[in-house]
Every structure is written in structure tokens, then in C-alpha cells.
Amino acid sequence: MLRKLSRLLFPPRCVLCRRAGDGELDICPSCYQSLPLIKHACVQCALPLEGERHAHSLCGRCLNRVPAFDRSVSLMRYDNRAVQLITRYKFHDSLSYSRLLAELLLIRLAEIRMPDCLIAVPLHASRLRERGYNQSHELGKILASRLGIPLQSEAVVRVRETCQQTGLDAKQRRQNIRGAFAVVAPIEYKHVAIIDDVVTTGSTVNELARVLKKAGVETVSVWSIARAV
Image 1 (cartoon, rainbow, N blue to C red):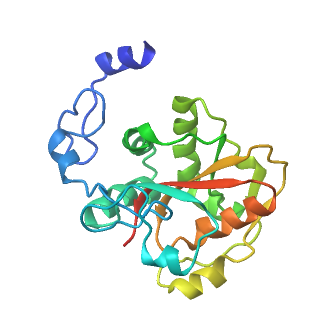
Image 2 (spheres, rainbow, N blue to C red; image 1 turned 90 degrees about the vertical axis):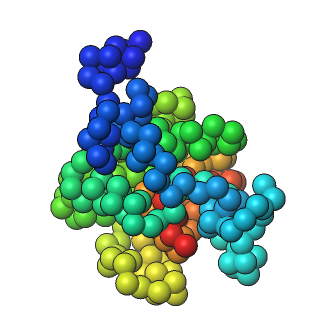
């Protein structure tokens, strides 16, 4: 009721063009249609696939190199439109974007088997001080609240400050992120979903999934806003 009242008093405006939203989302129908939403993807890593595919299709990468995580869901391709939206959210202190991105992801998650808890990809303490917030954690808070699933990000920390993954190839990314995470509190849940904003090669979420499974987690899902091709 409070959410509905808030929407009546403060009607949403599109975060991209500033026109009126559709009544539920902070994005107008035109801008929503322009988003590069993923229609068909690898069920394990969410890599976008061309054409009609079976619901349990795997991409060649996952067939050749099985990830530590078990399944993935991503909202859109990481192309220019997605870059514009996520860059504003990630680097310009625009936390208002987190509500829109979370709501859009919730639409995609409607038919997905829910995990027991959520864990946002942690930032190193120095990066967190620099940015002021963890964009994945902000998404996780909204998702946890809407789904009634606990968010347990404090159970995992980033113990090593890594260099930026941008510009590194897949092998360099795996080497860069190796040993970056540690579980510092017991995780009593068997199915955990990792929350991240962008999955590029999957190296970061793969390393986090590896650490979680070593700590006793049986199934690891990955939920992200965008997936690079």
C-alpha cells in the first residue's frame, strides 16, 4: 500500500529520457523497448544465444569449460544502451537506478526456482570507501526484500584488492581474481544466488562460486543485470 501511495504522490519518470514512466517502472515504454533484453541464453552462464533454443541449452564455452556455478539469469546484453544505464548507476552515485534495475530483473526471475539466500559480489574495503556503496549489494537489498529471501553478503569478503578487470583477457581475469574472496561466517544455506551488475567473462562470479562451494554450498546461481557477449 505504501508503494502504491508513493507512486500516486510521486509518479515515476523515465531514468533515461525523463518522460513519464509506465506507472510501475521508472522507464517509459519507448526506452523499455530499446533495452537489449536477452531472449535466449545459455542456462548455465547466461551467454546470449542466437535464434530459438531449448530451455536447457548450453553454450560451447560451458561445454568446454564447466563453470563452478550451476545456472545463471541475466536481464540484457551489455551493449551501448545497457552500458549507458549501468554506468550511470555504477559510477555516478545514482542509487535511484537500483530500483528500476531490480524491478526489471524480477520480471525475468518470475519463473525461476528461488535460492535459499542471496550474496552480493563484495567490493574490497578500499574500493568501497572510494565509491561509497556496493552497487551489487544495493540490488541485492531490493531483491531480498521483494522476494522474502535473506541477503547474507557479510558472510563473504574480498580479502585481496585486484586490479580492474577491464582490458584483461579471459585467462588474465581468472588469474587476477584468484584467491580474492574468503568466507568469514558460516553459510547454512544449500542454494545461494550471487548478485552482480555485469558478468563479462564470468571470472569473478566463478571464483566466488568456487569459494562458496568449498564452504559447503551445494548449488550456486548467478543473477546479473547485463551479460557481455
